[in-house]
Image (cartoon, rainbow, N blue to C red; front, top):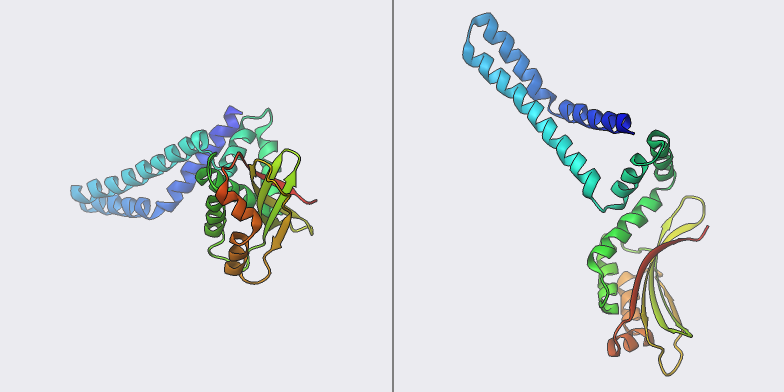
Length: 228
């Protein structure tokens, strides 16, 4: 595992070094000119360019290692878990294959991370709606669904965003906010057809939303389900 981590760090260093390659090239040229013409200033400036490229590359690698050790982003967390396994190389290959074949999965995980950062216990259903509005602000017709279910243990309001898994199924990012059971059962389902604004207007006009405005949410859950 240590060898694999070292390989990742070295790959990151040389990748960063390549990005600063122009400074190394200029540095070498200035040093060669300076030595040939016996101009110490050119040698000094050339050395400074090379030193800058090395230090900048090292700084990038330190930042990468820090992110790998501390970031809560799902992609980084998955990489950290793979690298901490008994066979990190095999697990990394498996992870890259999984993400490569299912880009919707990393999108769903990234969106879940975003929601978990801004939604917390005690939030309102209006907060959930606003979070989903911001999540889909760059899409005209995001695949959204609203549902309201009354169960034995209370009322549950759901907002769902579906991500295509390229196999005819979906990864569904679902946010559920639970409430105490209402006096009368409420069951609702609304799907986004072609107008995002009208969809959220319909959600805010629903009986479930009306109930949420008059009562305090009990439990918040943000999770991903696969329809496959």
